[in-house]
Amino acid sequence: LVLPQACAEPPQLSPERAHVACQGVEGAYSTAACEKLFRAPEITYLKSFEGVFSAISSGLCDYGVLPIENSTAGSVKQVYDLLIANNCYIVRAARIKINHALLACPGATVDSIREIYSHEQALSQCQSHLEQLPNAMLHACSNTAAAAQMVAEMGRTDVAALASYHCAELYGLRCLIPDMQDNDNNHTRFICIAPRPESYPGPTKT
Image (tube, rainbow, N blue to C red):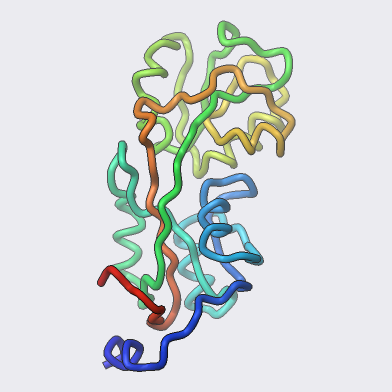
């Protein structure tokens, strides 16, 4: 009954200000999705997707923003599993253009890189370009921005991260190779979840 009730209520505008949970650290692509969905979000970063769902169910945050599907790498299966396991609702969605860059500490060169860190989806989205770096071992981690932060903290010239250009500015890294994604039309769909259903004017999905 909750969905018909939400649809029957008078239309409301999406809140401009909200406390939003995201997985990762500052500079994650989820940040861009939050800023597209809300004009002035107050963002709390959690270590895992599970943490985002917990923040919603506990009332710590009003909304959660999560990646659910990429045009190149496909579905984020863990998020689908968590949607089934948790009592929450998808209330909005946003499509974000994804541009991955190979970022490293000052002094690093493409030839010096022996390890590359990023989220498994980002590594999948850059597979063809990564094959041109056969001497570099690939390491999956929790988030693209977390990878950039970790590489900056290491301070080594033989490690790099696949992350957004914004992460280079945030963490003092330099871009070794821009546009690493195999498909230039690389987009990720992010969903906004809430503990209760909400209906806004002009919905186009169910």
